[in-house]
Image (tube, rainbow over all chains, first blue to last red; front, side):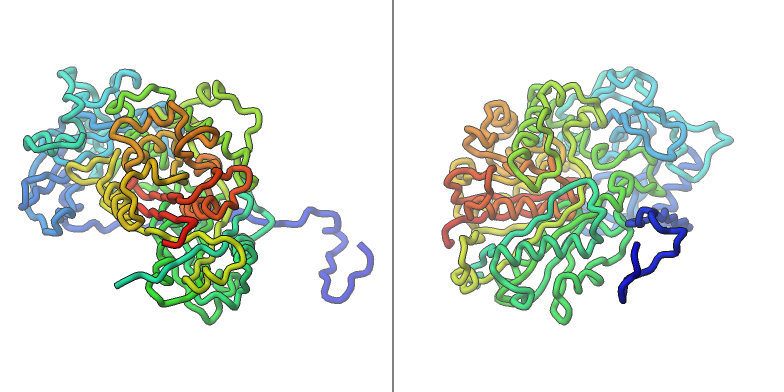
Length: 190
Length: 387
């Protein structure tokens, strides 16, 4: 570079010919302590006892999981806690071939599914194992496989995965969120 | 109370691509905004306010970027408003801007949506571990895959309908110089043979990650009349939302989507969308969402949307309702801009300014965006004629 004119930046000799930096990568990380709400605390503590709890709506009896202390459809508070069984059906699922960065013990492909517990009105996410992924079906009945008693914490991860029970499938029209209407004999769009 | 008539006076887009390393966010939004102003034949000083949208801040890790972008958008000392509605945000942002003109608050408003995915990681930003759930969801595809599976099983659609949509949109993209993906040699077989990412979604059936911005200048009736070039008149605007998980929810055909479409068509005086709309730009980030939205919006009967795809009804060449002539989200996805691109492309069509992907004689066009867990909806109808 020849003599720099006014306002131009003169680089030290050691940096001449070096490619200019246009961007830098600065990974950031945030760790925080989670303080659960009253309902989330009950839910997580119950996991430690291999129990799954939900909240029953005072309006129409619909059972929500995880419990949030509220029925968002009607804007009413919920206080009635109910124990749910650790059996249900696959409402729907995805066969994932994309590994989650940093997630250990989750070989691809894996099946992530919306698990609809018997008696619950909404599904929640769970891993399905115990059969080849191409055999997983909408409506397939499953049961929870728990961590050994000595390894239980206050976390949803206490359920390692869900496995088929071998019982007949829930029909498509009644599987997943459709079950809520179907169970009440109402017209359903599904 | 009657709304003020509102028109799209100008549209500006950046070339969508993986990385715009030569510009910052400010440079990116300014480029699109300046092009919209040039298209409208107006100056920065003509703008009364700016309405801006992008996807969640934690994607790029820049909190409230609208504050620092006000300067680049010629907005110092003027109102700037930020809109947040996840993936539908580009559409919602345009509608908020339109409402300021419709409501008589401002005469001319600059609106813009953007994303710099190269400085972000949207897939994993959408999969943050949550204390009361297991961490197994892998990005948006992991969320939408089960909904698509449900549609496929319910409708009895042939397995390759999604591939047909993906191939069609990539063909359309070749006619849009702004599109990110220009896959000249792509064959249908390559689309079919691509690996499954989130079975039943193939890699070839997903949207790319793009940097880009899209801007529009909206004006009132006097501004529309004063424009030198053609304008697009707003005939209807609607937004709806619902929760993403509740008992009895129809995830495939959400109530909020149906209500939103019914509202926007009612405002536009449209009773038979398929025959009265000439061209549609719909938010289709995963191929199967084309037939699903065709049904939900009312362009097709329930479980019959896939037949429109199969018959080529949504193709630019020969279709009676061409969908995503720009190449759609499947060919360009700067997330926060993607909804606004749909709205802007609809406007370009009725202005007769869509270039090689113009639908001949388009008089009325439909713009659509959705976001979140298919729970936020924004739609508009624009026309060549004054409403």
